[in-house]
Image (cartoon, rainbow, N blue to C red; front, side, top):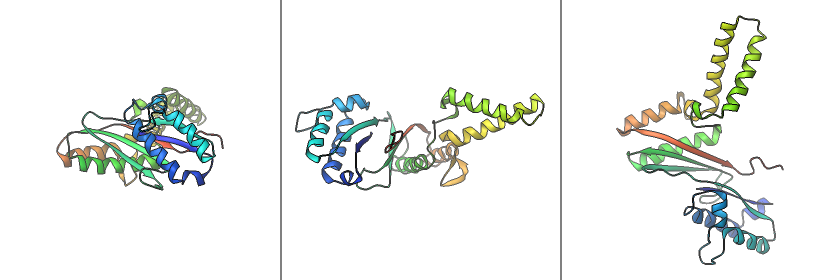
Length: 222
């Protein structure tokens, strides 16, 4: 699970009590379905209070507005969920958290190492979806419409325009879909090709089934 807990200042974010609170929230969240509402309603150990009420108490103690903003959880029936924290300030704490879920019967240590590399890739590239098929259809249609308009300005025949658009759409998917992206640690191969290579090395199927990336303050008006 990855959780985002906001404070008003960086000074408070580096406070031991605040960091302990965030760790406790993540720990409690593991026993829920991972949704923000479920985590907020979960009971904190020792106090018997909900996470939401515990955060409110911390506001009074710390003297600064705090809030549990969002959470995300991944799980696998067989395999690993690898993690990566970018710019880690303390164990498990930082401003950018990534989870990558990998299903496989392979060696867990090797899968975790590979999964961490994929998570670092996700941190760097911020893909929109796991695969081409999972990119939001509205986003795909918007990009296609833009490419069609741009291609028609060239004055070329429709059959040529169609090929131009398809070429640009392939490039688009290579930029936004995780499995189609060039692997940052080896740009000569796509992430999907690296997954296949890892499966060959481990002698068993390996499948990346999901990822999540939470960047602190993403989408919040500053």
